[in-house]
Image 1 (cartoon, rainbow, N blue to C red):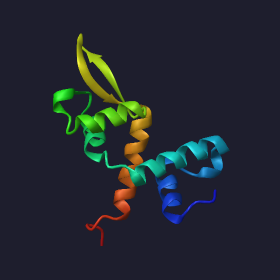
Image 2: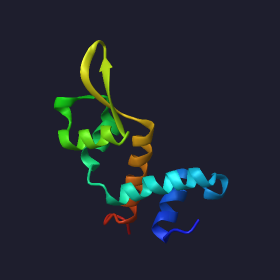
Image 3: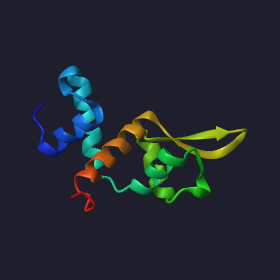
Length: 111
């Protein structure tokens, strides 16, 4: 895997040893890491990951929600017969884990 040290560290932290993955899986996981490094949809994704499913009115940002849905990180769902809810997808959960790993690298709280 030819990637910068930050990407390698996030990959190992989130996905494990890349040697065990196929070339296609490595490419897919690195794409998620790239998105994590360049996205600003943290609040909405975090809310869906940690507290979801959530009603559209409870989301921090509708535009972030739309981007997450369009890119497969979130999905509109029905909860107990009511529509207008949103949930994090598996792809969204992996993205959230990548973002958390990235932010831990730069946290000011660490010694």
